[in-house]
Image (cartoon, rainbow, N blue to C red):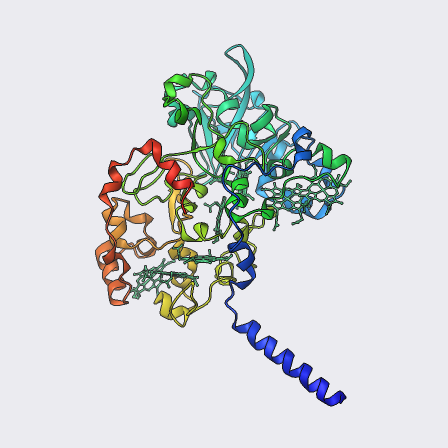
Length: 459
Ligand code: HEC
Ligand code: HEC
Ligand code: HEC
Ligand code: HEC
Ligand code: HEC
Ligand code: HEC
Ligand code: HEC
Ligand code: HEC
């Protein structure tokens, strides 16, 4: 009897193992992919949180040591530094600051950024109000040089004076770089801390049973919103409702979704930067790929992975910010869901058959072909911003959309070749999708200011 039972159990275990290893890798995400949509207008912020205030990450550290540690080591905690508390914050060489600079190091209170570039915040009274302004030079870490910085040249150029001394950071930067500023207009804590993503925590700190917002509890589209509040280029929301132009919002134009708190319906606060396929703008190439930084959201909402329920946090741990896979540069990050000859692709049987490069070649790294560097952090920087469009851009598409050859994945590694000849390689390899596609010229007629509805609320 015992023997029969053991045999049965053994058979069961073997069958289960066989089934498990033959399930598509995407199976663990099935629940997420099939979660019912809750709608874009539903306010998901817990009721208890509506009367709460922002209290700062120090309070959270006590009970959430690990999350705190991960976050503290991530770039989110380092975005804004107060020089007084952190003299190492300054990465620039101030001895070479050009003579026509409108600021000195002694005047600077906060540094902004460190990885690609650094800006400097200086206290200023603007329009009779205490505020901050930005120095007219920025430090570029890619060439270790000072270069001019004129923030009023962005889309809101008609809303602010063309002078760094009277250009306030309050409306144009601080909502995304200081915790709490977006909804309270108070710089509760420098940089992107816990409450930027979990909402105000005063009630939860008093009583842990009183909930804070956790983005992954809801459908994937709404999960992403907590990242999209910052990682997406905007226009002032008022430009939508009153058909206003930047001129009509003189000195008040906001470059972030003012009033938003995690869980609230982002669509009520955010007007994404307009884009229509086939039309190049200051921020995007004609195929939708990024020309500038902080465009991850604008790009990703065009992608099939987004539309089918894959979220930012499927690839990025929200506290560590690394890709959740062990080797961020390698293929693990993608292969935890993808597998060869699977339904979701790649459809070929092996890596080499898919990429037509040797398996240990750089030309077999998923992100090199599917996330090429298309954008820059400053005019004078090299291409450093990786595209979050994921769909492969053919050399012929790069050409037809009028994009620089360098933004094409194949060309980026084969600069001795032409786009045409690289396209021929792909044709030889049997990758012919592009022949079926054409730039839909009808799109060019779409009113740029109305396209955000299409972008946000697809089905
Ligand atoms: C006094 C200890 C304590 C403090 C302080 C505290 N928490 Fe918590 N937190 C808890 C406990 C306990 C839980 C688990 C509660 C539960 O599962 O119902 C929790 C759960 C959470 C969750 C998960 C919620 C969910 O729905 O799964 C988040 C997010 C969170 N806390 C964030 C924060 C943030 C942000 C702060 C600082 C503003 C903070 N916590 C401060 C004790 C604390
Ligand atoms: C960039 C946004 C972001 C920041 C900043 C952030 N969190 Fe989270 N946090 C999330 C998201 C998203 C989840 C859900 C993760 C999941 O379910 O996989 C989460 C989950 C949690 C949880 C639930 C347990 C877990 O690990 O999944 C706790 C507790 C928590 N966060 C605490 C904190 C604390 C404390 C801080 C600050 C030290 C913080 N978070 C900063 C986005 C953030
Ligand atoms: C309040 C604004 C804000 C929110 C919310 C936010 N981010 Fe960020 N994020 C930033 C800023 C600013 C930086 C640049 C930090 C720096 O360079 O110091 C950044 C950097 C990053 C980086 C690059 C890290 C590195 O090491 O270079 C990743 C990845 C990232 N964020 C992912 C996320 C994800 C995923 C979410 C949502 C769970 C999220 N962010 C939410 C503002 C935000
Ligand atoms: C809508 C939110 C938002 C606004 C508004 C915003 N930023 Fe950022 N900023 C981000 C995010 C997100 C990143 C990181 C992601 C990226 O660069 O692709 C970032 C990155 C940066 C970096 C590079 C950080 C590094 O480590 O190299 C600097 C510098 C910066 N921002 C300065 C500014 C200044 C100055 C303003 C105002 C004129 C501003 N930002 C307005 C969200 C914002
Ligand atoms: C399918 C996986 C995947 C998804 C989904 C994804 N990312 Fe990424 N992301 C990556 C990879 C891979 C990198 C490049 C990492 C590297 O260079 O080591 C990256 C890089 C970044 C960076 C660093 C800046 C840069 O240009 O390299 C930021 C910021 C970022 N992602 C934010 C986001 C946000 C916000 C979302 C959601 C809108 C998102 N990502 C969705 C995989 C993903
Ligand atoms: C969390 C799971 C998950 C991860 C991680 C993931 N993918 Fe995907 N991916 C999917 C799913 C599901 C689809 C299928 C969408 C469809 O066709 O319905 C898909 C589709 C795609 C497609 C074809 C559709 C499109 O968007 O153009 C490409 C290309 C792609 N993924 C590339 C990548 C790359 C590159 C990475 C790593 C940086 C990656 N994926 C990581 C789940 C994932
Ligand atoms: C040398 C460039 C290159 C590399 C590297 C590459 N791909 Fe692709 N990938 C392509 C091209 C080209 C297509 C378009 C196929 C078509 O249109 O017929 C594609 C299509 C896809 C698709 C859509 C489904 C399909 O098979 O057509 C997925 C999913 C995908 N790739 C995932 C990946 C993953 C995961 C990796 C890393 C293991 C990867 N790719 C590496 C060039 C590349
Ligand atoms: C990240 C860099 C990288 C990318 C992206 C890349 N390649 Fe390559 N490619 C290489 C390297 C390195 C070799 C050398 C041989 C090898 O490793 O397979 C190579 C070899 C080749 C060869 C063999 C002949 C030769 O020049 O040695 C062809 C053809 C080729 N690539 C075409 C393409 C096409 C078409 C694309 C776009 C779909 C592409 N490559 C994308 C790096 C890249």
